[in-house]
Length: 499
Ligand code: NAD
Image 1 (cartoon, rainbow, N blue to C red):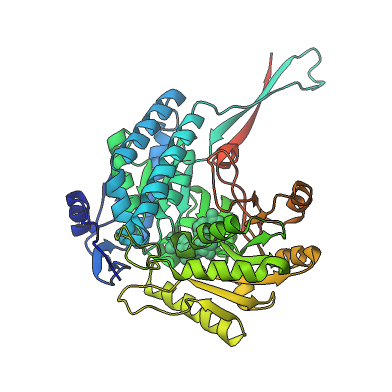
Image 2: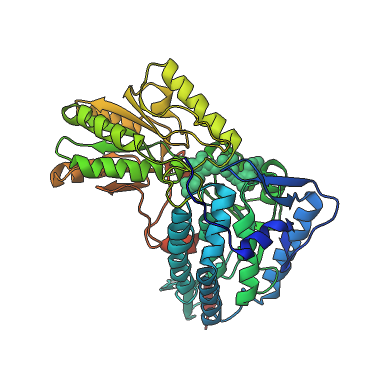
């Protein structure tokens, strides 16, 4: 099944050969006595690299380092144009090292080298440049006030936005580099310092980014990386009193714990959480485009995408044709390693994730869903699951309600649009949705009725740094991207001057 694999660059091989430790004060600092974790290559289950897991003493050291760097003002009080220039240099370095970073991500996370190049690197470099530009555009307001005393006094009142302080950025394993930079870039543009806690499975690209940040001229202590288990290192980071803001992306279950802990110290937080994202296909939809959109929006990164389309509400008049075309095309997708340039479906991130998706498929079978294609684990050593189309799904089945985070597309039939909308909204998640139709009146009517942070029309999953992204309901609190991100990493200070 596997064709010629891309051979890793020598810089990638050398990076993998090192035993990595948390990045503190400008360098990796092993303590010498930490637990070591062996990372495995999802494509073949071989050992890939080793990381030292931080203990609580290291969490303390890393937060102190970020706090010292913040208080020193070397970054937070730098002229905005200088911060912007430095962040643009950082983006240039990420672009120059793009192939190296893409290969590291493909080997560590399992994703297609094409996706790693185009999204983790390409789209992310655009995002970096966009956010660098915000450093020089942060602003407050001047306000007219009517304070009556002391008699005759005049006032000048205004607001200014100031960096919030030390940020804890907690990142999942699906797009490790991109999501880390979604936090690092706005935090640094605002003058904050940051500790990134990557997912235990996928720390490699973030560690390389921290080295490139130093090379770009970002002072030591401004961008730190904490390695270790979420329940130990991550939890201690969130609870640390010197952390002023937690920016968390991950599951709803962990997000609730993180938000609860943050509240104890009044630490500001934003949560970007899970999704069970619907795609609503109206009778007039262009079926070829809708099927292509279902494959692109549902199977990108093997469906390990928070905003992935995973439940498809298709009108009865085109249901059979949609299922038939989708099943035929999905069955043709070539399975192989991320470093196999011909492969279209790659391994999941871990054995655990593979087993979880297979378990969801078993439940779907038991509940009466029909497997149109896929449904199995291929005979390969890596963490693969065949891309799967489920038909005959009803709204009560687990595969129509729960986030699977794998290559599984559940197709439901509807006759009454109002019933479909009610079923779409009858779910705890509300991250994203898409509507497929050229009937402008119907589309405009549907957009405000769908409970989701993003609604796409005739596409599914495109993101832009200027367009706020985040969830309704249990898909999160707050927004990333655009001005919303800048507001999330700054505090508003009101100033009132008597003269
Ligand atoms: P996860 O919640 O298990 O872990 C996310 C991060 O939190 C990891 O770094 C983990 O080590 C850390 N963590 C775990 N327990 C912690 C604790 N008690 N305190 C602090 N940190 C802790 O999620 P995952 O399995 O890595 O990622 C998949 C999930 O992420 C899915 O639910 C997906 O929908 C969601 N996600 C959401 C978005 C979004 O933007 N909304 C984007 C990507 C992924």
